[in-house]
Length: 210
Image (cartoon, rainbow, N blue to C red; front, side, top):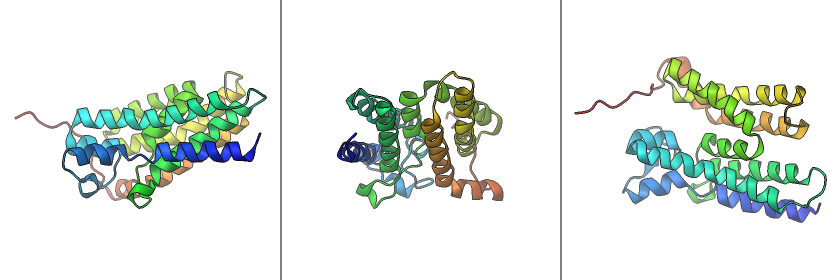
């Protein structure tokens, strides 16, 4: 496998991930999402600032970036050995990095949860189903989006390891990748963790109808 092929794969995935969906959607509404709520350009802040329809749209758009990058990389990989898996992992890391550190906004982007979900759907569908369950349970119990995302991220390498050891799915490279993006997602939530410890993190609440 040519190093150039991996470089081109990573560059293409990074550029796809760098499209700041939340920022662009908010700008179309005349809002700079960085100046509202948490200041993050991700789906959660768009949801809180501009409402459910746009928040859901941004989530699925960001998830689609991750899925498309990995899917296309694996399809373009040479049909030999573990090439598809390695191309998928390279694309996955690059697309998440592009989303989290988009050059179009001074290398400040989202936290990568939706994009990671799309990546995992392409690479490890069983894992995404498992961590989605963790997210729902923690969110229903706590009403903290950030806590649910942190717990789901932390559980990812655990589920991948279980599936791999049980012979259901997975591999050593995928486990390493799962550990990497889990650590990155938790790191990107470090300010949320601080607010959770201080008791100042906002809970998710439904807006009352007038």
